[in-house]
Image (cartoon, rainbow, N blue to C red; front, side):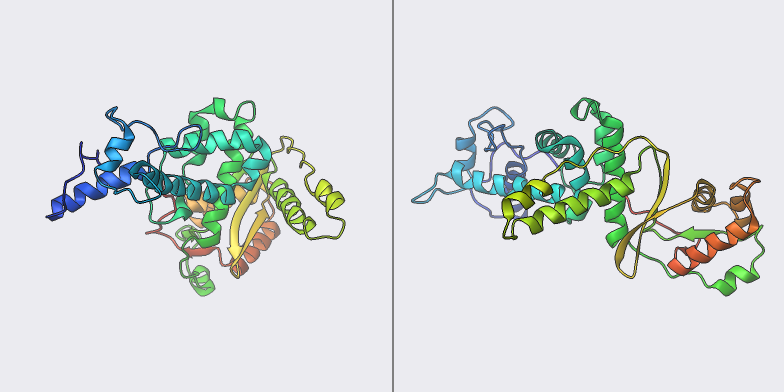
Length: 311
């Protein structure tokens, strides 16, 4: 966003005046909150914020100009905080509420929302975690992988899809010339931790927590529901995060199968991709893998594919 004008226009008499007013208002609304979750007391040039607010917001019989602007400022940030919390239950479970809150505030200050949809809000969270490792230490590596996994879920849930390639086209094209594209909503992840099973455990715990508050013996049920899910121990894991019949799924992959899909995604021909699996892989294994992937509709025509990445 461009820098706001030094002063709001005294009246909107032209398109330029309207643009200046909009930049002023937007800049004030998205200005980061104080540590007490309030509107900043000073504008970007150091002037008292109550004076700046009075330039373009009228007071009423209950609220000053500053207080009225603060309502919008807080609503904007609280909505972003709610959205990022909804998308990151794994990070909250791994870091705890306070650490996650600090991370979310710092992230949104560094990478504010620039999209018309909140769907893209966490697209750069993994990058930020690696840029600012102190915010998640000593669990930075784990936190980065969780952020990558949770963003892959968003991509899988509502990412675009392309027409599935026909089996007849695959059959009539020599493997040395055939290239297959992967659906944009499929994300291949080579992880150092078994994030998939851990996220499932976190979601089950959260679902139990929600149900527990409505049980007759709520106190005991809530106590069980709030048990901490143990952090995952390091273990190399290969996963495809995808959707099928409009439902989200995680599919574990054999390392050799992962290498085939990864090679296809990078543009290798079918023969080269299969060779990437290694000499120990049997033809029957490859056949079974492709049968499963075809049934899931993962393959589309190669080329002109835009991977969903809002960053």
